[in-house]
Image (cartoon, rainbow, N blue to C red; front, side):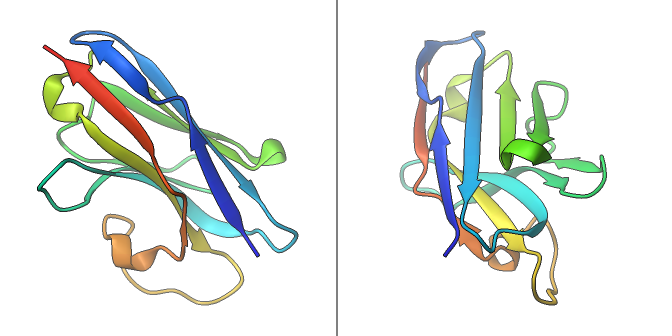
Length: 128
């Protein structure tokens, strides 16, 4: 069974930076891609960023381009989200997700339905 565990969230001020981490564990873990999604109170979950597990291809939501950076350490089964110049609208629960690599998949990296692995999330709050 694969588990994803996020860490690194917290309360920061506008303009600050945070780095989120997500560690995947499980004997059978493999992935096509890993991503980050966020959900603010009263809003739908939205895509933030994704990274291919076997290449350097990255994908970002327009709202975070130029401010956030996703990276990975394959040897550690870990994906990171570096968040700079944080804004109050970045507040939400940030969840790590993975597209399982042991079966075919269809869909877009930008849609949460494509992902089969999910962490419980970590809270990020940006005060103004």
